[in-house]
Image 1 (cartoon, helix red, strand yellow):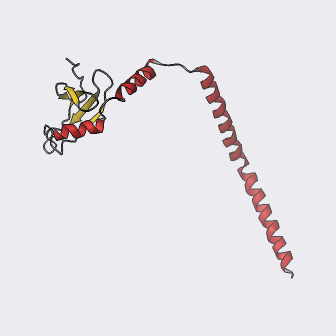
Image 2: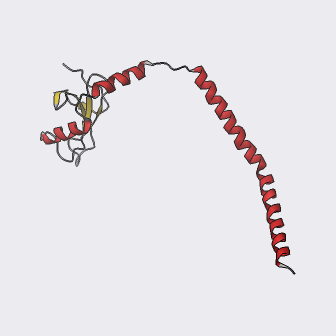
Image 3: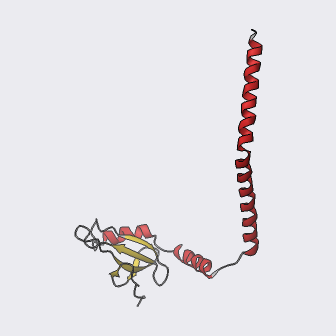
Amino acid sequence: MHIERVNSAYRLGFGIALVYLLWAQLPNIRTVVNLAVSGARQSQTVAAAQPDQVTAANLEAQLRQSKQRNKLSAEYLEVQLLQSKHFAWNSQLRCVVAARDWDYVCTYMPTPLQSRTRLQFGVDVDATHWVTVSDVVPAETILPPPK
């Protein structure tokens, strides 16, 4: 028996197995291709139905972002508030950009070891420090507007 004949038989067997596997997976491959094509068509239809528009929410977000460029960052505001000695080091003070009225809304836990109650307040800032602070109210309630 010659080695080339053995290798040739292995190649033939491998080729047949490969063709069989592709043939067996053909329905799955067809399904994936159809899904990709229909998804592409659907996204093109949605994009054509919704022309580029400036929505009120986008405009408001852009306005808020432009105002924040010349303002103290939320992280630095947190540092300043903690340094003011009005908050304990473990009060979990967090400040985020406010949706309206205030520049930032800050939340904290006045007694983190005894209670999980969070309070919040609004803060107006300028480029270097905080300027106005609202009354403190329970978290998830409406903040009083600036006075």
